Image (cartoon, rainbow, N blue to C red; front, side):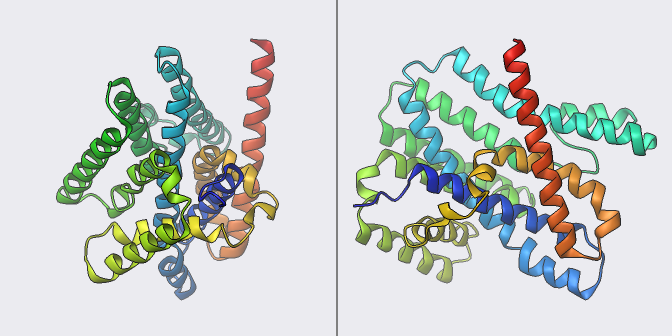
Length: 304
C-alpha cells in the first residue's frame, strides 16, 4: 500500500503551499480596481490560509518524525534548529537595510531596530506564521523532553493548540493567527500512527468526516483541516513531483516565505496594476534571493 506521506511529495506540497501564499499576498498590495478586489477575494481570502494549513500539517508530521529519530534532543539540536530559522530572517532584514540605504534613506529610523527585536519586518509586515511556527517547534521539543508516550504528546499538543485557538479568537486577533494552526497536531497524529493512515478507507473516512464538519459548523478551523487532508490525498492520485521547481521551492519554503516580503514591498508601486506580471517577477526575484542565500551559506560553511 502506498503511504499517505512520501518525502518527495511533502516537498512538492510545500512548494504548492508557497506558490499559494505568494499569490495570496499579491492582490493584498494591489490598487483598488475591480480586478484587484476580485483577486483579493479569490486568492487572499482563501489561498493563503489553505496554504498555511497544509504547511502546519506537514510541519507537525516532519517535526514529530525528526524528533523521534534524534536520540538526544540536546542544546546542540535546539541551537541548530534555531539557527536554521533565524539566519534567513537576518538575511531578509539585511536585504531591507540595503534597499533603504540605496533607495529610501528616510526609512532608516529607530523603528527598524524595534521591528527587528519584535521579529517583524518593515512596512508593517508581521510575519505571523514565522512566530507561530517557532512557538510550535518550542512546544513539541519540550514535549519530547518529557518521558511520556507518543499519543500523550499528541493529545497534549492538541490541548495546547486548541487553547491557543480559543485565546487568540477571544482576543479578536486576525483569523490567520489561529484558523489553521490545529493542523500541526493533526500532522503529529499522522506521524505517530503511520500504519493507520496507510489504509485507504480510513483516509477517505477522515476526509469526508472533516468535510461534513466544515459544512455544518461555524468553527473556523474545520475548512482548513479539510483542505489539508484533501491536498495530501490529491498527491496519491496526481504526480506533482514531476512539476519542475516545486521540490526546490518546497525544500526552501522558509526562504521563500521570508524573501518574498521585500520583493512584494519593493515591487508593489511599479506593478500594482498588473497582477500576473507582479506575481511572476516576485517569484523570480524571490528565487534569486534564495539562490544567493544558499550560495552564501555554502561559502560560509567552507570558510568555517
